View 1 (tube, rainbow, N blue to C red):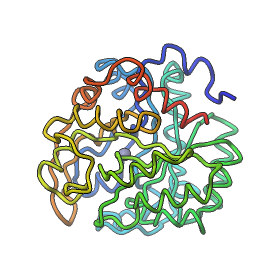
View 2 (tube, rainbow, N blue to C red; view 1 turned 30 degrees about the horizontal axis):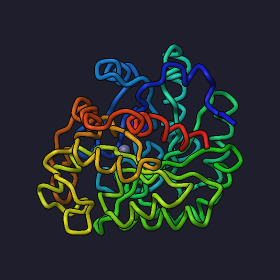
View 3 (tube, rainbow, N blue to C red; view 1 turned 30 degrees about the vertical axis):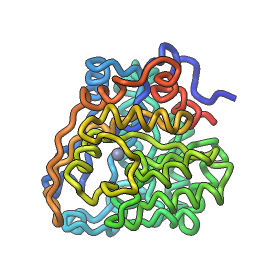
View 4 (cartoon, protein in one colour; view 1 turned 90 degrees about the horizontal axis):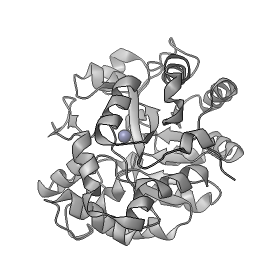
Length: 328
Ligand SMILES: [Zn+2]
């Protein structure tokens, strides 16, 4: 049974399955770039490059956190703004969409974001309350930013799996196979998906190009993989960075030509792969402690990933697979 209203699927030609809106306190406080996006700007960008629809979620840290600690890269609760982690950000996104830009409700598909470790029951109560007021269609998790291991979804975050099942919501999770981020491992997400066959998961960011893990994801009926920020992902492989897989475990392709890599992933994983930009995080200039990264992308670059995929396959990666992920 279809879950998205018909009006939200009308004239769908290209669905960006991974977009952030709002302000990220961590990125702002560490003077990183980008750190914000708003709905009008996002919609204008979509029109400019030819995107008909977008899945949107807030950025990845919350003003419910203690901001002086966040500025130093540490997540602690302050509890002064909102009733739970991400209460403010999720409500802000939904109110902007449905009350300030109601004409956008046929183009944007909102997913609230979760902290899977802290005050999880309270978050579900808040989400239940929000859902009575404004529709949303899925959930988003960023383990590294929230400093909450993805496997907290087995314990403190179990209530979110129940919430997802009860509402038929998919869960899109930031993911990597690389060792620098032990909290967001693709292998752990696949394990969760095996344990919860009735919940649909997206492991974001192209499995970091890891061939075996992508093949494993592809074999599972309840797992999808998105292409969020794949252009700078290819740049990182060319630079032999350890942010993604640049060694021999990666899917073989010419990483100097991101559209070729995208076409190769689409050909290998035609039912699993979904196009998404990570807008505006297709660009990443990190000024936080640790290795400084400076990677420049654009919506045009992300759109150009599709250049070598045509016909039936293009439809699948452009929106059909994403609709299967969202609606089940
Ligand atoms: Zn993202």
